[in-house]
Image (cartoon, rainbow, N blue to C red; front, top):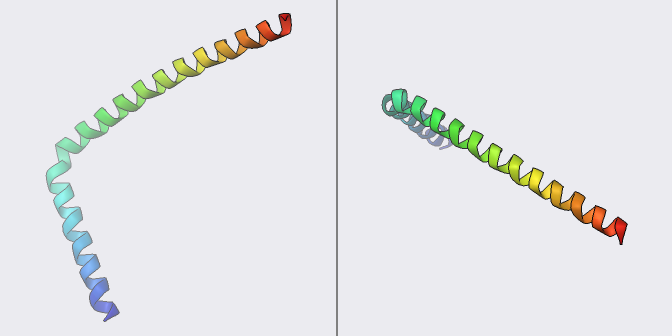
Length: 67
């Protein structure tokens, strides 16, 4: 019984891999570029937010020290 499940699983994996390869050859490259571009954009936004937060923390520390 375990062999039948393993064979079914492997068959499904092979069919899935084949369909993925068939439908994503060019589109997959475009998807990778789109994901990379979005990741770069999100990274830039995160770095900007971290710089802003750091500046706010520094400003608050300076205000607390002067008080």
